[in-house]
Image (cartoon, rainbow, N blue to C red; front, side):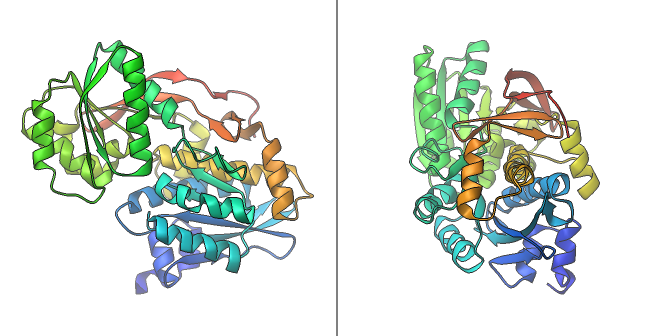
Length: 387
């Protein structure tokens, strides 16, 4: 870890989140802001563990938001202090880190990734009255906590888009394989319901543990199912294994997945041939100024749904601070967040409704190893005034 010794500087210029957290000796690393009225923001994601790719993608989005809305770690009159935490993608660890951020670091708002973590810390946010901005798709995230704000498409929106594409392709009978993860189970439930409502049916459904690598028998049952298509709804490492095995077994049926199934790690594990034609849905990433922010920070434009969602979440928080110079407490910050109906991002206006960001969703497919965007589905962002 000697190569990461200067972790504060390296994080500031774009070093990996994992390097920064590890160099700090574990759970968090903080970036000190300039003296003056200060707001502390907790940024919690997966620096380590099986979903570290997810955390790295999120950190890129946070960096883009900081560069756009808080250069020099100042948002309007507010000095902003950022404190990073590693949830490891684990609910128990996330709860511990959330408590550290709010009780020891006195964070006035916390951003988090993954339903597994977001749903675990949701009751703590409600009890402590701390705004929780989550890239969390689980349907219950905002339902019982007025301090929760969703910055990831809902499972209802994502599944509706997948079912719409299935209907267009005349695919009625689906086999499903789902990881036992809160978000993925909720997504499969929503997909199954909407598929049935559209006249389709699920002819076979299997769930496996998120950490289970013994998938051979389940994949064989999927092959034997009388299905028109398969929805592979798994985590990063399992998606690659299952997609590869389906290809090796000669399952020539159309394959649907979600963004983890099309992640760089999953594509590399499955191989280009196995990934060819796989369909998924995520936010429209054709945002030139957002991509330019990434290019300026990292010399590339690599982005995923999580990158953009984390960018939007932190941008919304920093935009709120810039627009309201009198924010000086958790209570006043929450009150102003509740009033936000639209956020002026560099690429246009993004709408919020009922504490949920409204995204453009796009069908995507994998072609020759590359992700290709198909025609846009729904609009939540307009080409309004830009900053």
